[in-house]
Each structure stands twice: as structure tokens, then as C-alpha cells.
Image (cartoon, rainbow, N blue to C red; front, side):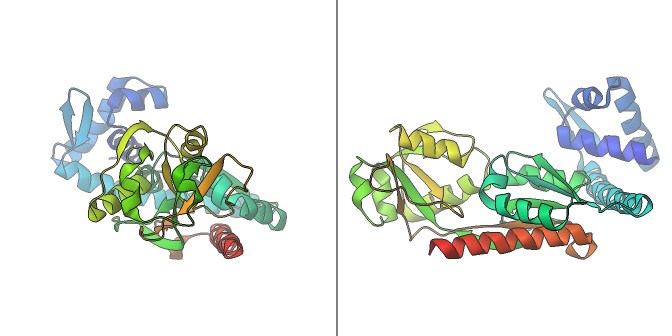
Length: 302
């Protein structure tokens, strides 16, 4: 059993495909299979189940995947910090987050951090959901993940930064646009633009709708919150979205209105890490700066 065997195995479990990992590594599928077979021989257990669409870990495989991913990520982080010491560099901060998160939550913090810490490398890895961010954080050499706070995840610590209220985005000529706020029951008749599939924000909103007994019709879905706003502005439906830091309700001359829906439970967002106590100082400083910036912007909207 080698470290390479474990790295390849964790990658296969995450991708669900031997061939996809082979392409990523620039080797043959047979070479990837050999890594897995060595682990199976060492453990005496079958680690993968083959299906028509790929592979999934067995129960034994899931146990090994969780332990290996945590150990590899910790080792990679330690090696990176040792390399920073040897080279005398300022260190690095690696963040995984959604496609539009940097713009909405981190833009001011990135500028401030870069000005105060010019020698630190900032790296961003884009994922399409909080679940994907959790997986990337567990499997890769990443420091921080910006996520929608949710259920506990084994091996991951979550730290809320702020709560986002919900607003209804509608065109200015919509009957609901003139109201200062609306009740969840008023959403029953909207033509709903659904939030990204498999996203934590969509699951949160769908659960709130179900709890309130609200059934909405929808023939449109989007990949991110910004696209939902654009489609609402074009008159293609109504979007229920989190009110992000720095958003300003458009003025009377604009084509879009954001109407508060105060009865919907707010969406908590913040940081996820493997262990706060193990974070390098630059990552801790960056996480704190993002939190400070978000709270300052949110306070300015009140």
C-alpha cells in the first residue's frame, strides 16, 4: 500500500469512474485499476462496486476513503507549509467556493488581504454546490470552503458567518412589485425560477415551501443566483433568492424589484474547514477578513 495507491483510490471514489481518473492522471485505466487492486489485496476486502455508469465504494471502501482523504489532505497541507518555510515564501491560501461567491462575498476582502499580505498566494477552486465543496475540501489540499451551512459532515467543521434573508425578484410592472414585503402564501401563484439543482439554497427553500404548504409552478431553472435575477428582470418568471451583501434594491427607474419575504427562514452561509486548529496563519487571516467584510456590508444595508 503506497500513498499513490491511496491518492488514486480517493480520486476514483470522488469521480465514480476509473476512466475519468485515468484521463486526469494521463495514464491507462489498467494502471488505475492496479492501484485499487493493490489496496484490495492489502486490506483483504472488496473496495469498489462496478455499475453500468461507473463505480461506487463498498462499505469497506467508504471507510478507507474517509480515512485516506483526511490523512492525505492533512499531509499535503503540512508539506505545503514546510515548503513555504524552506523557500521563505509568504505562504498560500486555497479556497473552494461556488461560481459567483467571490464576487458577492469576498471581493472587498480579497483586495484588502492582497494589499496587507502581498507575498501570500491566493488560489480559488470553483465547485457547483456546497456538497461538492465538502468533497473537494476532504479530498484535496484546500484550506477553506465557503458553503451554505447545513447538516454536520463527518471530518468537517462549519462556522457560520452571516444569515441571508430571502427576497422575491420581480419586474417593476408585476403586481407584487409595489409591496414592501410579502407573505410566503403570496408565492403560491408565482411562475418560479428554480435555484440550482442539488444546491443547498434550493433544498433550503424547497423545505421552507413544503413546511408552509406552498406549491409553486416552474418551467425554468438556473445555474446560479445572478442568472435567476436576470431572468426575473427579463420577465420570464419570479425568483426567490437570498439577499446578498451589497445588493441594493433597484430604484424607481429600474426594471427589477426585490421584495422582502421576512417569514422565510434565512439562509446561513460561512466557512467549512477540516480543522480550524490546523489552519495556517494566512488562511485564518483570510477567513477572518472575509467574515469582517461580509458583516460590515450587511450592516450597511440595514
